[in-house]
Structure formats: structure tokens, C-alpha cells
Length: 164
Length: 378
Image 1 (cartoon, rainbow over the protein chains, first blue to last red):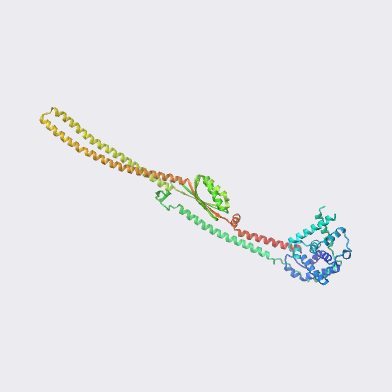
Image 2 (image 1 turned 90 degrees about the horizontal axis):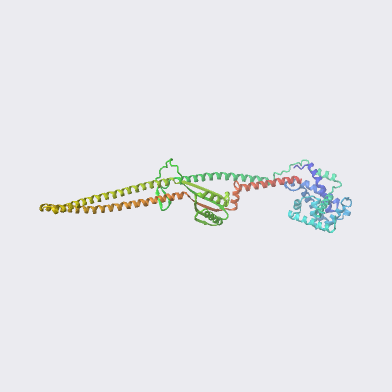
């Protein structure tokens, strides 16, 4: 496959919504998310020749690993993660399934951070479980088990709240 | 409602809703694309993947093993054929001039060429089989049961962890069904047999020739004996007639003596005296004749008895030969087979080549998978 401007344009259109949504969710700051999005892409463009050596690796997972490193650097500098407040950070969002969204956000608060990251990478970043396993440096089987447990846990909460 | 499916759908929906495009997406994209070098248009090389080379290596190894094995196989078949041929030739050559159906009966064999006019066949069959199994002792016991079931005789048997052996004798009529039974024990893949046969016509001809000679000898001796008896009777009769004639003459002279003159009586007495002397000379001859007769008759009787014994022996040898032809002597060797050899038996060609082919195929699949995944991920 040729990595020219046209292809990178296509990749941008495909990956950026996922990456930007992911960054907003974990950073709770759209401006910061845009900065890190830009930085991530720039670093990816610069490091693209190195990526060529790693045949078989997913480009999107590679991009997400860069983004995660950027976030970690930011958190190291900032000192702590800012707690999520959708009223502040996400207030402009209008969604037809607003009730679902609120419910999932409530569930996410009850997950551990590692499970939250797993859910984010799977459902927002839309990464395959195998890529998530590589990204998080966890055994793929363990990832599947954890995903299953997280969904089962969410299902129990759903049942308890009689949510339909 | 399927809660699990619903929760997944809700998460998917939630994830989709979380995906956002930056407000200044076009600006950001333009900026990023402007950083892409103009000459950055190089092909991503998937040929650097080691799997494709690994696949080629395995395939090459498989072909190499196949070629080596094929060459080795043809060589071994060639040598094997020559061995079989040699054995066959040796077997059918008249290496011994003695036919030995058993140790006690031996007959000379003239070793000459057999005339083609004699088309009789007395085929002696030998059967040898090799079975490969993982249960030596069990199989040995089952073979013995089968042999006895065919009214056969087990001559010897032994079994160990890795090898076993059974030698036996069965009727020739049962050989084919016996072979099928043995083959069914392990299946054709683990069964090999060698059956050889030899025409015992030369031995049969020797026996028949000896029998003919012996019978002729016996007839000659019996004829000779009859002639001796006849001669003896004639001689005895001749002597007895002589004595009877002399006695008649003496009686006649005694009657004449009653009415004879004195001079005539003296002549008669003299004549009777001469006749009695003549009788006394005949009687020893009779005794001598009887003595000679007894000697000759006992001698020829001993000869007849010996020839009759010889004839019986020849007839026994003939019977033994026919029994031997009707009997198949065989042996079955049992060899332990390991799992590798078992797999090899089921696969055409060397198993190592198959393993290399499989490895080549798997690595090729992995190579294809990695390429496809890389394309999809891009």
C-alpha cells in the first residue's frame, strides 16, 4: 500500500473522529483534545517510515498508542486527571438517545479505570480486541474475559435499574 | 428484551455518539497533510515478512526430503529385488541331492534336468508374514488361537516388548483363509507377507524310481526263491525215485531167491548187497541237498525281507512327501511400531515431507493473514 497524501487524507477521515472522541472523553477538554490530536498526527507522520518496518501492526492502534503517550505526558505535567463533567465538557451535544448516553456514562463511572479504558478503546476508538490487547500489553484472552465481565456487570446494573 | 445484546447495542451507540469531528477539522487536516513530505510515496513492503521466506524454506525442505526419500526408496527396492531374486534362485536350485521330508527319511536325488513331459506339480508352500503392532503379546496369543482354529500346529513362539515370533504348520487347503484372518488382525497397512513355493517333483521322481527298482528286485528274489524250491523238490524227487527203484529191485531179487538155485542165490545175495550199497550212497546226497536248500532258502528269505523293508520305507517317504506338500510351514514375525511409523503408514510418502509441507502451508497462511490484516488496518 502506498502512503501518500491521498491515503493519509483517507486515514484522517476514518480515524480522526474516533481519536478525537476518545481524547475528549479522557481529557474532558476539547481544546486540549484538538492539540493532542494534532500532535499525535504530526508525530505519526514523522514516524511513519519507522512504522513501515512493523508490518502487520494496525495503523490506527499505533496512532492511538501515540495519543495515549501524549495524554500521559500531559497528565504528568498537569498532575492529575480532571473529573468528567458532561455539563461542562459536553453540553453542546444533542443526541436522540440521550437517555442511553447518560446511563452508559453512569455505568462508566462504576467501572475501574482499566475497564473504562477498555470500553473506550473498543467502542469509541473502534479498535479490535487484539489491537487493544497489544496497545494495553495484555493477553488477548484476558482482554476478552475482561470485556465480557464488564458487559455482564453493565447488564446487571441495567437489570437492577429496570432500564429498557 | 435481551439485556446483553441491548447493553452491547447501547455501548455501540454510545461509542458512535462519542466519535466527533473537530470543529476546525479541515484546518487541522490541511495542516497535517502539509507536513507530509511531497516525495513520501513509497510502497510499504510486505516482502520483508519472515513468514514468506519461512514458507519457502519449509516447502523446499519438503521437496528435498521427498526427493531424497524417492531416490533412497528406489535404491532400496533395487537391492531388495536383487536379494529376493537371489534367495529365489537359491531356493529353487537343486542345492542338495537329498530330499528330507524329515530327518529319518532320506533319499538320493540324481540332480539331473527334469523332463518337461512330466507336468506334475507337488508344490511345497512356505509362508512368512510380518505384522507391525503396538500389542505384541496380545497379538501373539491371538495368532496362536487362529492357528489352532485352523487345525494347525504351533511349533514355536516367543514374544517380548518389541518383537514376537510364531512358527507353525497348517493345512495347505486352509492357507488362503488363514492369510485373510492374519491380515485382518492388523490391517493391510501393517501387514506384509512373503509366500514361496517349490515343486518337489524331483524328489517324487527319485522316490518313484527307487520304488520301481525295489519292487523289481523283490520280484527277482521271489522268482529266484521259487526256482530254488522247485530245483530242490526236483532233486529230492530224483533221489527218492532212485531209492524206490533200488528197493523194488531188491524185493524182486528176494522173491527170486526163494525158488533159485544155490548158484543163483549167491548171485542174488551179491546183487542185493550192491543195491544196498547204492542206497547208502544216495541218502547222504539227499541230506546234502536238504542242507544246501535250507542255506539258500534262508539267505534269499533274508534278502526278500530286507527288500520288503526297503519298499515300506520308500512308501513311507512317498507318503511323507505328499503330506509335506499338503502342509504349509510358516512363520509370523511381530514388530513393535511407534506412533511416527504409524503415521507414516497412513501417509503416502515420507512423513517428514508432510510435516514440512504443512509447516509451509501454515506459514504461508500466516503470511497471507498478516498481509490482509495490514491492508485492512490501513
